[in-house]
Length: 415
Image (tube, rainbow, N blue to C red; front, side, top):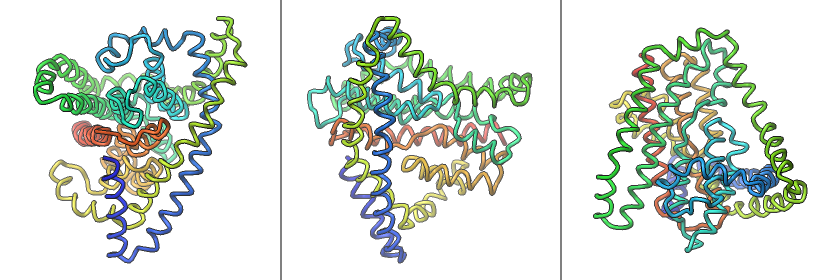
């Protein structure tokens, strides 16, 4: 799959650049992206070293095992191939929890640790396992409870209500998560044959029921104004202060609480931290070729003007579903580049205003979806996986569900 995706991006970029006269920009985009990829990987060395040391302390102290036991009922259904007491379950929970709170600084190293543990259970070392595909589905379609980055951008641009997109983001990101899980389950079932797939669909009625009730509850709470009423009872700056408090204290608290717990358990915390930290450098170096490959292709694609062509071709379709054409570039860029999509969204907020339908949709899109191609390149690259199977399709389906959910909930709530 990655062979076709990578060559497709490069070929489209080359042909578009040649046709539009942007071939020099394509060259510059490729070279700049290659340098960016190496800088990202090198920048990860310190962060990876620190968090893998902390993760090693959590494992040795038994914290990861405790977390595994807490989510055992859910993990058995999502990851049937992983033993219930395997440390990968705890690492996955830590990664997903960090994503929920918008702590990307901690989420990536924890996710890479989870991939390493999943690789230890993988029989085919160059091919993604079923558990890896499901884990990537949870990352690309991660529920976002507090979209800190986009709230901060809205506040900096003078929004009168920067947190108003929390409800729409929870709804849209929940949609992305549900459909990401369903897509992963479906592709994995199809690998076992149509009869297995049909049997799985018949047995999934409870999941659909629970998902429908949860999404309906979110709509009801937001539409009736209950969430807005709750926030109105609070002092104007309290919620913003709470978000700032979480973003400021969450990571230092983890860096203190986990070593403290390990110390109480009589673990040699310094030696164990060093043992875990040694892995950080190797992981960061291993992902460089994978990062260079995907970011060069994306850089060429962006520089060639191909994005404008796709926007032109897809505008009639977006008009049918009620998405303003101005939002489409942000939706298309989000799976490719986090910084690129944030730049587009910031510009939309400046031009149209944070409280416009365009501003609200763009803000929600950033919080409800993930940079699918970056996640696939980094996570699989860390364990040298070359055959990603259906991971790209699963991630894109989750992204699409999040975008469609954004259009629905924003038109429902803000028109």
